[in-house]
Length: 463
Image (tube, rainbow, N blue to C red):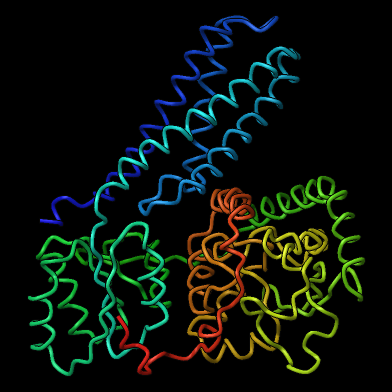
């Protein structure tokens, strides 16, 4: 049977982690043998530093989601590998002048870093080739009356690397017909994806059947249930309850977060001053109009402020159309603006907003008052985004795209708020450096995603 021969995605990410660990260890062992000492740094310190370097590389790769359950492309793996090795090398560059002041060690570290990159990417390529030869497991995505059409479409085509997915739009009035569908369909699939917005009886039947047939189960929750994903089990006498505590920031965490914002924004401006000067010149020379673009946005508690960006559109882009979300291949975007958007470089001036206190480095993306008023009426829980200050980057920024639907961006924002920690902020910052090199994350809003209402038209019948 095809199902018995399909890839086991539950274990593949572990195999990649083990393979990468072996590749790093091999390079570090070779480095320890060939480079036992570097000037004043003896063998014991070299062994210790090499072990620490290897652990740092693995930590960065894990932190940047290289070993997530759903596979990522070889290109994305390579980007994460290169960035992780560079970050580890940067840590060594800080340690060396403080404790050793040995130039030979930096040269050795640079050579080891290059070898680590080649070794890990080669291991990824070999394992990827082996796993890709196996058939993909099958995934059944179930929708009822086309209520989640745009999501089912994205799931079907968005998991193509991992699953052979099929979308079934059912128009059922009773549970008997659904039970018959389950009996015929579930046994031939490896995994099932359902929406908990389905009618309760059908949802329960699907979840119970997936467990009964021992299938992997994916559930797309409603926005109101996002907080449950971080719930703690508390017992009231012998009654099990899910405890979701208030996630407002205490004074200490808020102080540290603000201190991080100031430090990172200051370093960012200092490091990007030359690139920003070059970008400003390119914007000025490529099209008429101002270099910078200022626009009203809303931050925490719906406080209004002026956000700063490099201009990426023609002047007065909304003069005739009014406020409008950017779409894929938007004719209003200038050639230079298209490049800036692809690498998120148009947002560099927002470091100034961070220093002013209007924004944080990490938080829900700031939205325009016009769209906030609209989305507050159409998207459940949207106003909860304003419990925290807006950010340059955020969870919806690194896992979503410019094209991500407002409903799903809100999911990510509420998940960030209910799961907030300083460690999560650090992870998002690292993931942001990865997204700069992933062009697909910067695509504009597709036309069919602009309407926030439910999709239940005849297009939903397409499998």
